[in-house]
Length: 119
Image (tube, rainbow, N blue to C red):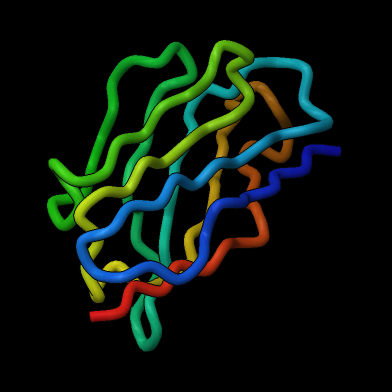
């Protein structure tokens, strides 16, 4: 059973940085796609950034482009999100998402980690 655990969230002042990480267990293959989503209070869930399992083809939403960086480590089952120049509007619950096209379940979600950016 695949389990995703996010960590690294917390309170931070505007202009500060945080590094989120998501560790996967129970999965022996490399994921095809790894991504970070977020859900801000009163808003829908949105994709923040994604990366192919090979480490190529990154995507960033316009709201975080130039400030956030998604990466995967050598083990290929941990994904990070480096968040710099944080703004109050980045306040949200951040969720890790992974996709394995060959798995019957297909997509997996973490439980989320809170990020609160104060002005």
